[in-house]
Length: 343
Image (cartoon, rainbow, N blue to C red; front, side, top):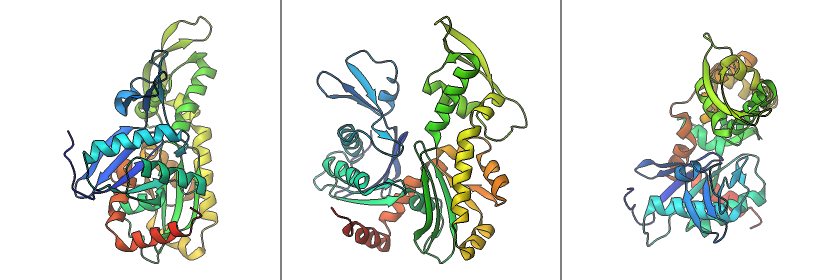
């Protein structure tokens, strides 16, 4: 059981398409749960949230539906997102007299309307003050990069819904791009490939297991294989079959190339002085998607620049929000940016 935090607590939320991470001041990462909510259709009441709801995906009776309220890094179901945030905030903060200050990450390409949806959902969920920070900025801070210097740093944050790429200098993104190709699209590519090659349908969770266990976007030194279950489209019956790492390499070729193209596009738009810095310092990778075997090797091969995967890469964005909440200059900057918006 998470203990009740202090009054006026500050918490940072990595509101991810696949996973929500919450960082509490002085305590580190205090919550890591899937972004899934199970709702009773008849009453609109929340049945479960997080890991318990994730286990219900594809297995619920007619009156219960398991929903992923975030799609491609942004809110697709406002009401369910608000309920999910309220549940997680109460789980972390317990009963509070003073509402918490919250910093939430958003992809670098989100619109003002999408930003407003995040602020409104967080406020309705119980936040006193809401700051928004772009994911690549938070990821760079969480990875331990000093972004305040007049020196170029390149970050590739590959999450579940989006891959955010940015060149950062003097505390801000000089060049950035956000594409809706990341962990979830890799899972979808595996499902489509298995269906096309083997005439077998597998679920998203099976595809994710394949990606994690034998997935690769760069040839492995030793071929791996994994036995999985699916439904044959011809007979309609369940079948057991074997998938190899070469299968997954072929399946992930298209989405991985889209990510490489986005990285190259950002590098092409980067000022020469900052390009020289990146050549010296390398490219930093964060997010769960960068852990797919060979992603760093593939980017390094195509760009010719050294690529490093950050420590605690999955938690970098959430850790960055926590550090940003302790940085008074960063808060002033984010506050000034929020006042420029139309809402």
